[in-house]
Image 1: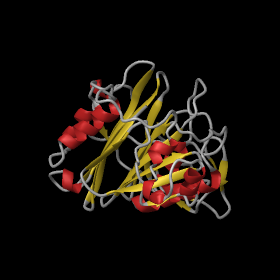
Image 2 (image 1 turned 180 degrees about the vertical axis):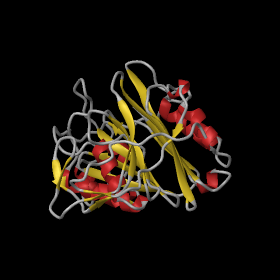
Image 3 (image 1 turned 45 degrees about the vertical axis):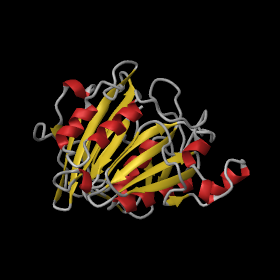
Length: 325
């Protein structure tokens, strides 16, 4: 569940990039929007993610994260360099693992370590290749899935989709792009796992790179076009309809939309929401950290820019400043 979208400069009246996401989680899960400062660590330090431990880098960037309280990772967020990332659950034909990095761990790691959208993408791919993805994704009951991601900064955007160990990335070049809970890359993409095409050939599902279709090959239950009334189609339609005039107000309206269940209520609910405006002159970020964007205001979130050394008491959160844009 969840929907994430981006509008590139040609789709917005002021040439900014606009990013938005609703985080749909099991009802009752608490989700927080927090600001964490830039951190410095000694060589050889280790990092405990949700389920596994990996080497820590010497510097992590200041970030704003919207995260389920029980896990280390984040559903979405932004960093001090103007990178934003959101993830989606997807179900694929590849096996699910009981341990590894959660997709939400990869979101946070990409934000903490990537100074551009491409650098964050490269970081996430490297970690996925090395550690794999896996582990239970819900606090109160078993739920395992693979992930797709939308990664953007003020100059470019990427969609990264995964099926177990395999992955594919597509650069978004114009207009708007959205992802929901289905694989959506229908080609061999701009970048791909070095063995993914050979895997599909061995499965008898394509003859080579020219007829390779990641979504068709790896979607659990087979690929199907989303119905016009689905969240996926509704978000895509609303985004495309406003290309050229896509503003913060448009983003808010989409994330509060009930047709198609974009603002979700029920056993799963929209537990948090993010809107970001990105430009080379500066970036702004607004969050909701309680359920149901339809009945709450977005609040502007500021970064904690005080650098903190490992061992020094860190800042666990930051205060909101400002109301809806």
